[in-house]
Image 1 (cartoon, rainbow, N blue to C red):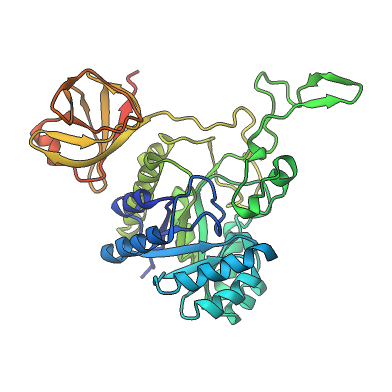
Image 2 (image 1 turned 45 degrees about the horizontal axis):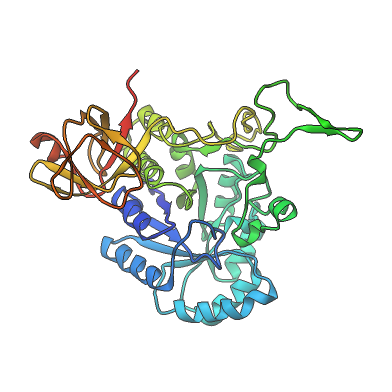
Length: 408
């Protein structure tokens, strides 16, 4: 019987842990800002890590801690103190990149399983065999590999677990190891502070005519010569499973709650369909397309390098606007904290974690004091009640996602 790969989702804070679990992740990965490669928009503390571990244990799911920076000597004292504190939390695995960090993990966390990060550039079987001898249980293979190469490595080292990225932003550097950000802004990508210069708009300047910008491409948008499309392999789950891949990883600890919920739900449904031997549902790809993206690519999956770059735009586009997550239902209303503006008369799409998507038109909104509202603005601290029919409310669970539908 074909083994179903684990679905691994990102979490940049405790709310995202809860959302990832609610929408079907088998495991989540997270890390504190100082020692993972996501220093920005990452609010995890040691107390949060303990709480996240409790949440995953209660849900019967797994949690992996990322300690995947490339530390310098000045980081080692703090890193040792950190590792001493986290050993008792009980992570299912720790993800690392650096050989020195591996040595410290074996000293301070000797019983914890180790997973090798994509940053370590594992792209051949001999490298995997080396890490297998050094007590590593799982390797995250490089994004540069084709399906054929992945299958070959899985076959040559059957005792190792393998994880691959299937969804999210792609860095043009070698498995993310890049010096461009540090060179231009003195913010090191290998220490979690990348400013993403690969997404910037570039034009050519001739030395003797510094005020004259020469476009590299004849296009009004300029040229994003380093700007990759987003990886999306949801259609390729059967091939990856048959190749021997253990886990499918979603990128995006910086991404929004709406993105996390939508993408995790889509991959959960695709995996469940695969387990039930159902044909791929193309509507799942349409669902992912409702999130912010730069266009999609298979990357190097089929062994080619075609259609990787997006030459028209760098910023993500959001075809639909995330409005919030339902916290509870009472009488004939759903309570949520608004993330973006909506009003009476808007058409709202409801995305429950475990049932079908449906739409409704907003007829009434109330504040927490039961005062009627016509318009709600995102970012406000207060919460609002949105009225629905009794039949619609039976389909809504905590963490159900509301998003605005744009009528054509």
